[in-house]
Image (cartoon, rainbow, N blue to C red):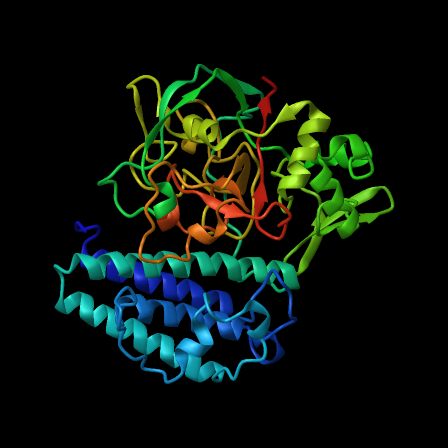
Length: 428
């Protein structure tokens, strides 16, 4: 393993990840520490402990070894190992009280940082510390999902003002396609095993929307009887819709002729110019049939996000090689914004908000790239191949540390609690 990040910067990232977790969970007390037992959330008390356990397992106990060291919390493995502790049992475990759980997390983080300071050239430690920071970032976004699902407040304030926009960005861009290297390249920093490695694909010419489907556009589908018209749904999508009794996206509320939407603990009119959010893969597919459009493949999405035809190479981010600044993308914020905002983050292809605002469903199933080799954290990707769909980009709740054009998110096609929307392509 090569040096991935300077220890001082890694220390800062670990502290920032933990501060975000604390901010998202500080008011989860009393009954909220466990909350209702649902298949799409974890009990917060368990999840807070799991994040600390994961960091300790990989950074202090050498979880990749045959004989990992003992935990500083006796019995922690039986409580917090998500690969072995069934989801449905997490509400009935003998979990430590919240004060003890948070103290455990503080002690683990302090020990990890001391070790990084004492062993600044240990690239293996740096790798696992980066993994732990990213893992905690992902759980922070999951806490955001939980807060939305359960109707809790959003702890992050809305921005005072958005970056200036160069104006509407509607319509399609026509892209020539051709030979393209899909995936991450070696020596490009930390990437997950499912991004490895770049491999040649052939992309036919295609047209892709400059921005995501808006709430107003999706409302047209709903009011055209979209959830009652069988012809717009796949067999599995119709089975989901019937079983869920869905008539509109979750959190949409009809009052007379008006539509409202619940965002965390607040209800407000639908924001017409914002991207539709909380739609699953089935709903995105049904809309595409209604609109005579289609979802992009993940190769098309990455090509639109990364390819810079002027120099004949890929970019790390849609806007270039430098990490996200405040003007580039809606990240680490309080909610979606209008689809014409953040024009400084446009890709070379002319697409907007390919990173930030909402995750974007793609047509592609989640499968390994050619020559896939599993990373030490074996439960991250491999168990989900063949059952999940790929999403690309990032949402408003994603941290800046996680984003890049090659990052692959993945969920089962019925999940609509996540902050996901989609953009479309013209039919071939």
